[in-house]
Length: 370
Image (cartoon, rainbow, N blue to C red; front, side):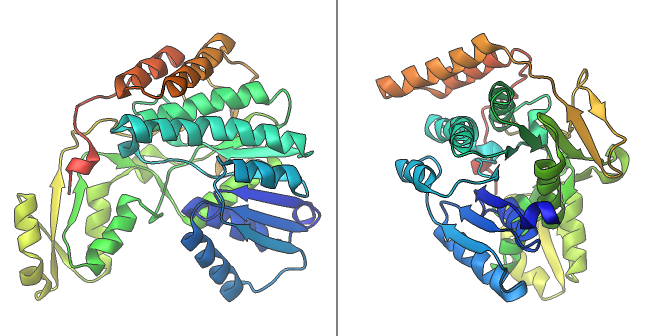
């Protein structure tokens, strides 16, 4: 693709599962320059090894930088760097469980909202022609703070879109991505531990390659404020985590055996493994922020379902509530200035910023589950 081979790219958060997929999609198209930034040194090393071992080398410059996009070091990097035609931001705190305490929750605000706004300003200052930032299906009618943080991020993007063209994507869970429950299935098998999953939570899934292609298409082909999402059918594509666990075990040649308690599941691994069976513990979800099903768009959003065969597009107008956005900025700044804040204060602020936010609070969190 000529547009890639003639362009300079910066991928922020490029060593995560989606970031690596995006980086590979760009690299295989021989960009003029490709810089990748991520806070995870180990994941960055694996990204380079993977690219060199699968695709080798390109004609353009390819370099990685193990730095934090929220740091003053990154600010210096951007100020002194060559400038980029396209900046893609894949960094995020993505876990629902990250809202359990005020400190991780504040970091979520920083990474998902303020770092996005900052890097978009930096991209414009260095002459970028387009900014892409990944969102989530959980931003549509959010019930958890992670999805709500991405919904607020989308509001900030609308404000900044008057200065620099931006596009984004909401997509489903990336199958077996780092830190996901499905990724956890692999680790549990390696460590000879039972599989555990809710049996009433339905999710859409895409492959890592599909996530990379969707992001790159949105970045290169999306018009200003376009939001791309995969066309998936609720009847055919929504699946429970417990169903995936059973299919995963069957593919490995094991028969799943459902246990009544966590204790039973932990105790029976050795016994069942000898018979090519594996213990599983399934349960009804009762933790904070877990939505029963996922959706990509909400009532009233303008959709273009004709442009692509497998991708839908939300056509956003530059509309946001400026008073709420400014209040969000000022309130977070005041919390940090005094050096303390509570989880309840942050939840209240999110409710003020998104009046339709339907936070699902149960008092229980995933860290209390197996």
